[in-house]
Length: 187
Image 1 (tube, rainbow, N blue to C red):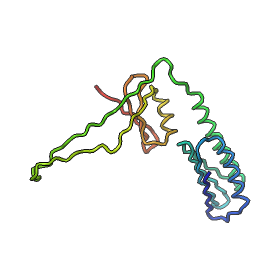
Image 2: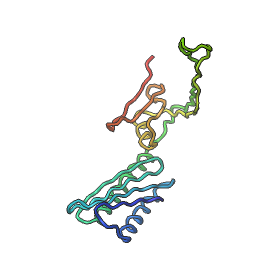
Image 3: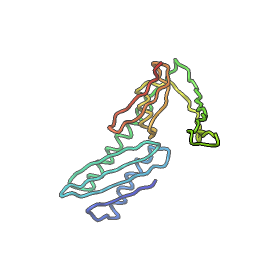
Image 4: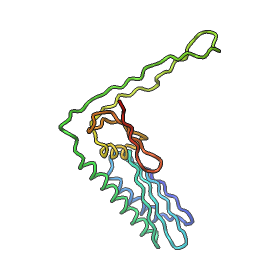
């Protein structure tokens, strides 16, 4: 596990660093893949603020707590992160795939097109668009709520999925204001 601890307006002690690392190691036991943690400790007047960002299994979990004591702030933020981790794990464990509909594998193909260059081109050659990456996606039927959960866990800008309600391919994307957009085909 990679842990980055930053202190603002305070002096970092070895005891505090060891306390934070032992708490984060307990949280790291919940994940399969390597976990990265960024910890920011700050003191503003009489408030001791602890902020933690975890990155594990494609999930970003954030917590921030403040109290009059730094150790109490660290304990509070670690408890908050533990609660969030349990929430995600419970959502994943409760998720049951749809048995009534079969899994469909769709293959997408991008067609290479040739576009003519304007009249200023004297050789008559054409510009080719090239496919630089091709990917096949397994398309499991999901409803919109399941797709939102998958998008939150994947840490990707969008998710292509087969809508279980309409049996059409949809695209779900995260917007900057924290909401989600859904692109549905119109025929």
